[in-house]
Image 1 (cartoon, helix red, strand yellow):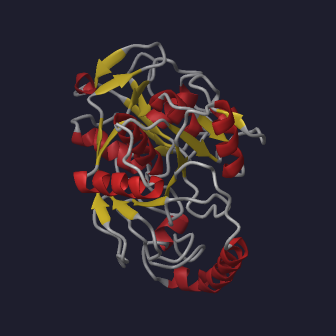
Image 2 (cartoon, rainbow, N blue to C red):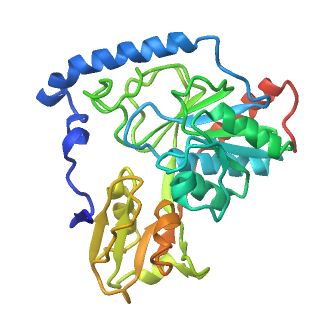
Length: 340
């Protein structure tokens, strides 16, 4: 059954509403957050000194909040930068939501059900090797065995996956920051913030408290060009003034709908579906002849049943100071100038 949204900015409900402030609901859950924090500290202590090396520099792109912060677009941008600088990157991921359990390569044509929707998207959009495994060190080793030329690994998510040693940690925040500042389940935090990271990147306002890590504002906008499962391309502006249906199965679907509105596209029907939704029971609200638009992440699953759907990629921009910091950190780790 589909979960429909009738407004570009649907009202937050459930835990997401509780996480915004320290109200009664948050305080009622606070004792559970103490238990969660104790377990998190125990695990961090258990893993101290036991992280395993991948043999090449590792960049982790993650977050400290639950519910999605936009890590995958940052991963795409980091990989594009590395390629431009002459590195040969590979990507590892857990492959959240997949039905398989093994360590495997995610190829551009891999079904999202087998590798996860985000790895499927990354394999298709970046053109670099992508491997998934429950233990990311297993994915890293399998990737390097298959592609020995890879000289840097980017982990999509995994800031709390302490078994994989890392050289760079990038913490991504959406415009909700740290919410009420409580740990799960009373708040959105997976671990206490602030914590030591190489850099924090954020949409909207900087996270508060800021901590000591350098923080960089990121700008996100929709690509002016869409593509569908038939290999066709179309300018996004061509949909302005049309009766359009929009669907988003991401952590914050309201952001996608709002960005469409900023481009002059106000959908006649919208469906906000759960993050990582499989689209098995998806049904359209409008006539099949009307344009259907979706996020690039949703397209890897939606195209199986609706190849006509237009996927709108997300473009991300970070200041040059961020890229300079990343380049300097990698050069220091390798103790040599970066390639290129």
